[in-house]
Length: 261
Image 1: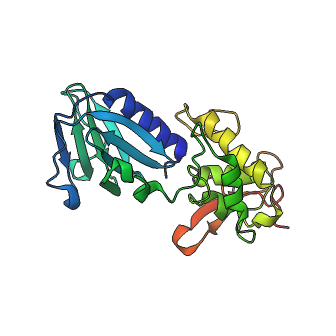
Image 2: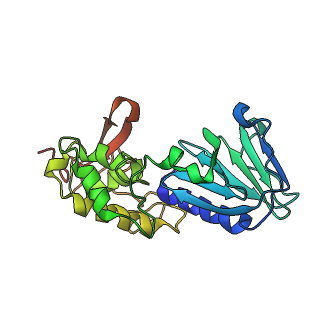
Image 3: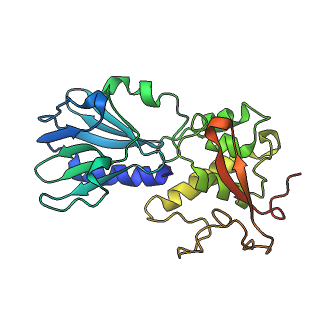
């Protein structure tokens, strides 16, 4: 699933291409928007809020989307072949004279009034990549449920927005925390600070890196390394599904570097 830094980069590219441009054609291929025509509106800006994409248009309308597991926006020049996937996976086409933005496999795609964006992103905690990131609120949000596991708390977008499975797994390793460690036993400010540091370090990278080595197979400490030796101590990396029933994600840890007690 794309994480906050991936979404931030996507929004930056979309904003650079579309901001200030007039839409000359729009094509929404979801039932709720099938008859919607936004041509003639100007793209004011495209911004990220956690993992949500907000494309703000003139007239007070925002195109809201979310990638979830495998959605994406692609940009094409006029006449360029679209390569983001088969045609039946296209959910939106937004065209200006210079660019065409094509949204593939978007599980969330809707329109909201720009002054009502809180109806779709108001539940989110502080955005880790926002210049105005509210550290104190993020810490307080996590600490409000002391019995919850740190792994679940970090992944909960209501606490702080942007962290996905890669970051929550690597943060726990770097802090020596078993993913089931309760929040009450965690230095939460340190976890929040490391979360922001890692995401900001990767915000302009194509790949997500936590080891400092941007090479295939060497970018993570434990993420997607089940059954392999820990890079620090050689112990076999373990994995399991962890989280609340509707938010279960696979997690990875080193039982020696991240003891449960």
